[in-house]
Image 1 (cartoon, rainbow over the protein chains, first blue to last red):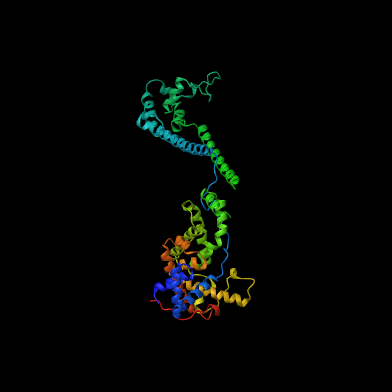
Image 2 (cartoon, rainbow over the protein chains, first blue to last red):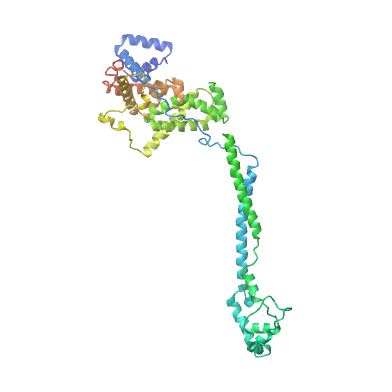
Length: 228
Length: 205
């Protein structure tokens, strides 16, 4: 038997031959027992396959929206909150960066600009001591250096917060000791300059970012619940 | 069930409409995958993948036999599963893994038919095992065609759509698949019911 006959028999079994092909094959089947035997075998094989029990699906294969990547429709205002969150977060980070840069610039400024103007103790010390040393022999320094106590007059009207009068002799004494009365405040200001972005703005930005993010989560949850 | 209306709704993104189609076709899809893959878990995975893929590409369905179109996605999912198996072969832990040694085969629970006597059930199990064994030994392209035509009862045109080959090729593959199955089943002659016993010797030149 050849391949062509096998295909004819298989198609005949399924009723796929036209009437003339069927008639020709049937006459051959009547005269050729081997061909008829093959047809019987093929029919039995097909019958066996058709009797194979059909299994039920072990579970339902229904799809969920998550499986197919469908997301719940979000309100039209949602992008506004997303934009606000992103912008506030960026500005918040930017404000920190800007303040850090400003602080760095302020701390480095004396090195390149005022020289002995004295933001740091190391640079201020030689210049504050040297004038005192040179001026000491001239006029007020000796008295201030030798007897600073008598020059400090404690009177309620003109004393400062520490109860010390800023008299020329007192200043001179401070100078002689290498101390400038205004220097500690100036140094403090130089060490921690006022931030470029005030803290209150940073707090506002943080609040906006967090509040928008929370609103986004709530909107998503509500949309998903409503969608189900 | 108005299939065309459900398909149209599903093409518009209506998942509920598509799930109605899933419930209608899931047994056919699962059985096809099971006979091609020969493993229930893999067949379930392939069926799920096939339905997901079908929903995502349902807009490409342009009419004709929906079952044939759906079976194409099943065939593709089975081929993907077989490719995965080749890349990462696994050792089955099923008790019938050593079946070639003549060990007793456990009866799958889903086959249990309350109307069958234990003897009939055992016979059905044996027949099913023999057929599945012979199917597993067929080349994939033959197996796919014979599963759809003879086990699922699809006509040639539907099978041609599902396998995406011409009708003449379907006829040829089906004839050769039946012949090979017949030869294979002869080696299980003692397992088969008397009415299914096959005679010896078809020689095809």
